[in-house]
Length: 258
Image (tube, rainbow, N blue to C red; front, side, top):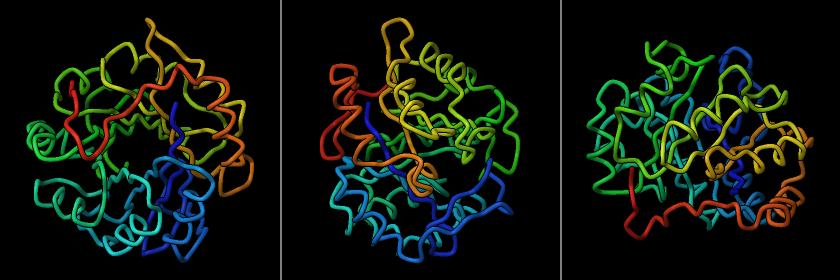
C-alpha cells in the first residue's frame, strides 16, 4: 500500500481543514515546495496535492505553487481541485502533475473523466459525507451515493475515496466505507481521511475485500502534527505488506482503466 503525504493549498499556503470546514483551517507552512521536498527526502514515492481554492471556485489559483511542488519533490504528484475541463487538466499537467483527480466534474459531466483519461492519467475523486458524495470543495451535496457514482463513471485508473466526517480529525479512517468501495469497483482504491497514527495505517494495509486491498492511503494532518512519523510509516508499510501493494500506473505509460 502506497502512502501519499498530502499538501492542501489555500491562498498559496500549506494548510489543513477539519472535516472540510473552511472556517476550521490550520496553516502549516508558507512554502509548499519546501514541504514537498521534505516529504520526498523522507522516502515518499508519490505526493497528493489539493487546491482548496480551486475546488470551491473552479479557478486554478494556486497553479504556481503546484508547479513549485512538482519541481521540488522529484516524485510523481497526484493533484485534485478545480479540474472541470480538458483545458484545466492540460494546464495542471503542464505544471508537472503526473495524475489529475476529477471530482465535481465527474458527477456533473461523467464523460469528462473518459475524455481526460484518453490524454493523461486520471483518478476519480469521491468526497463522501456519510455515504453521499459531495461536490464543489465539499460545500454542496451531490445527490448520489458512492456506489452509484462508481457504477456510472468509467475511464479512471484509480479512485480516491475521502470520508469528510473523519478528514483532519486524527480519529481513524472509515473502514466500512472503504470496504464498500473495494467491493463496488475494480479500480485501485486510495483511502483518505482520518489516519491518526501508525495503527491506523496498519488497519488500512490489512483491509481486504474479496481478495482486493487498498492501493494507497493519503495522510496529512497526522504527519504535520507529529502523531505519525513519515519515514517510520513508510518503512512499516514496506515491512508489513510488501505483497499487498497494488501498483498504480506510471504517468509516462498507458494505464489499464476501469
